[in-house]
Image 1 (cartoon, rainbow, N blue to C red):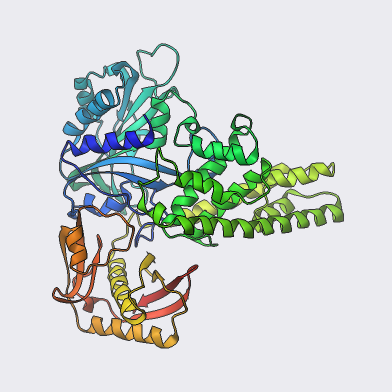
Image 2 (image 1 turned 180 degrees about the horizontal axis):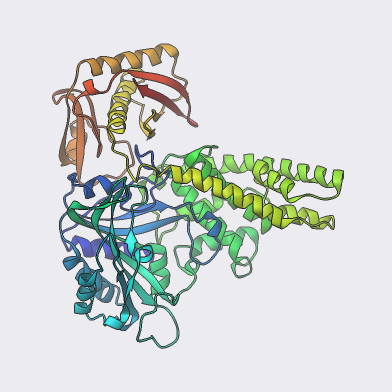
Length: 588
């Protein structure tokens, strides 16, 4: 079974249980200031777990693109990845554990043909916040899982969320598959790493409030997650994810360019394959390399790839060749994600330009280290870290240059400084989650509505070529990226402000309705955020439905009247990359 087959089998199974397939959300969250990237299928759906109605109903299934950056330094082993695909199904106040547990068992044993004796499960052991989940354990026993293969584990193992301070959360039950060559143990030991987790059913019943208390939600929900990469490796009997056909076309291309064997260069080739696959998907969703936020993560992935390429002897530009192997992967991506095909030329161009820039930086770094060696005949850990910080110059290459001169590096000092820097970065990243997964406070709701007014006004003032290419909202301001080839003049910016404030003064109603996507397009709704939409979408209209000011496909949140917005003021306009501009604005 290859990745494409697994995804199809999963989606078809839940369609047979009356689920509607929804497309993957963009990796870059739309109007969510709390996180740089989507890291789980639940993220774009959080409002619907709290009672908001989803246009596609209460049973959903999809394959979600995800990026997790916390483990970047772990990439290079057999299992960690920056980008991955997550299979998920959701019940939004519909079915609960009584249906989900039998379905999970059915899918694993009948659709994936896993033998019963190779399965084990864990459930929540209970604590002061929620009771021991005896009910789920009994449901597993009904399916044929013996009690000896059911482990009751604490919150750190069997509880999901919230990832921020507040939000929906609940106990989960995880499914494990025996991967060892030895006879299968009669008793499940969750610490035995030959038992590999392949699926997780989260039973979302609670909301953690800002006092740290767990309150029952108005509805019971299901959120599941099955990682495509891990599942394919496990079902193929592989302990190394990179040996699956998800990765092999990319690995083979790296072998070809470097004239080296994967078996002798595991870590650098895994890092190159992982980071470039992630970079391809990040660029496809509108991000370009920069020194801030998502753009900085992208730049770091690209630079690490180039450095690892240098370590295995690749001296010429190679990123776009490896990216081509990702884009053309017939077993997984080609033809599945429209954004890859639509943005193919842009992806390759961005990677090539960034590689050219960074190779110049690397050469500067080499000159700096040569100067240091010539001047003092050694390089301290602090100086090495300075090179690492300023030029992205990897410690392995610093050591290499020192060895050529019979010198050594104080690696302990370098690692101490690097660890301190990482802790500071993690603290800053954690701040992104301070308000939970998705902040739907009153000010965020106002800014979200204001982006619709801004989008419509930009098209009126600058032309219909304007399309939204990204947005970011915090409680202080909105940031809106859009396609436009030149700087927006001061006169145009004042005109944009004037039109938006006129619509605010008119106190226009903001209404929404669910309709078929094709009908939404016919009605004049804008739908530029991603190229793939579900059959049924929510459309928000600002103004009279027959003579509207703005109409967009969107999931919210919005105020119900523009008069609630205050005064709109543009603070700054700047470039956001080739053919793109960016506006910062506030509401007063």
